[in-house]
Picture 1 (cartoon, rainbow, N blue to C red):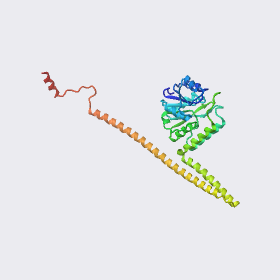
Picture 2: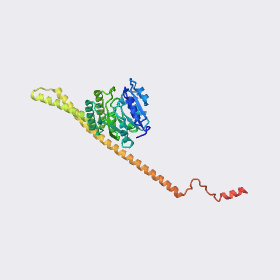
Picture 3: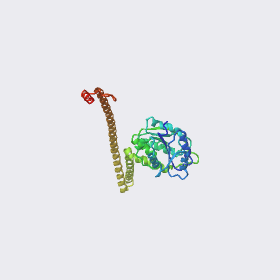
Length: 352
């Protein structure tokens, strides 16, 4: 387990007076002393209760969980961050397992998998189905299987967090972090955790339909640069299918009823042409991205090789310098050089 100076426990909170004190004391009991609560403007006394429990409390300048996380991490000096919700759904007992891959140097970002041990009542059936769909969609588009991309239990190094390009303000922050980890090849691992139901009297801030729509748009928007074939190809395929359906209807009506639908025919042709162009563009963008990725990997390998050779040259130069000094037989520090013959007569004359 890392010392308290190495790990900061980050707890974004908004109207969590029913649970915030218990969450803080549970992490203190687990050995953590650096606990930061960033409050989103609670009106139920959450900030006061957090201070009384011994946590450092700041009030975010913006709104939304995503903005709170970005603002809080900028204020953290510790090299490791353990982020959890302030609603007692995550256990402090899982903190050690979450931090172990970071401390061992095996990963830079750790996601807690809630589905590994989800207690009864912790998540509604509707939310479970939605989570499964989002995870499958993420695996398909981003070619990574993180198990539970919407989990709020995260552990990461502050250095890796600075490499992420984050802009989501609300509950889309977890999705965006997963997308950015996949995009920037940040070493990410998944750890099984226990997910508990909220205690009585604690109300959720999550709105399934609204926040689910935001999460889906976050996944789709980021696909533009991560998987352009899917991004443009999906729209192109849909446009082609709609155009094909319109043209099929026009042909059917013309053959069997003798009715002309010129406008529908024009619309169908335009829709097919647009769809085909988007599909072609998607293939071209995917090829360009693949070439860019290969070039980036080559550049990274070249930089690594150059750094290794520079270290070898520096080591060899230092070894040669030491060897030259040894062969020159330079006097050791503290030795007094003997007087030269020219100096001795001068000393004798001065005595006379």
